Length: 124
View 1: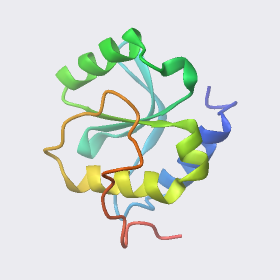
View 2: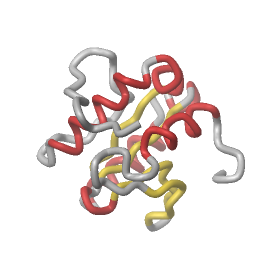
View 3: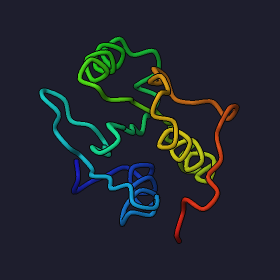
View 4: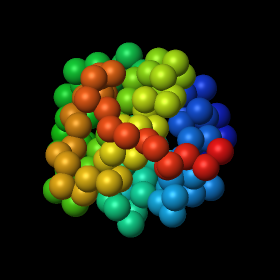
């Protein structure tokens, strides 16, 4: 998967890589037990997933997210289209999640409403 990422995964990696979130280090395509997650920040136990239409109302994803939550991870899911067309909003939602360690995992990709501040988080 790492050698052939989708356009959305590539765009999301550009947003997350090289500690652009002021000291938060993300890794991509990481195995966690029997699952491979798109992106993870181990220090904050935050997983970020880029989802295409095949993930809409997926029982598998719900089971996977519940398992990962029991392991102490929070999971944020974003639709590929949002990543490609609303990168700033996606970045703001990630930044808000990194700042709020008490937030509940999101079982479905976030809507455009309710995203947090991204100010100062992106270095380039």
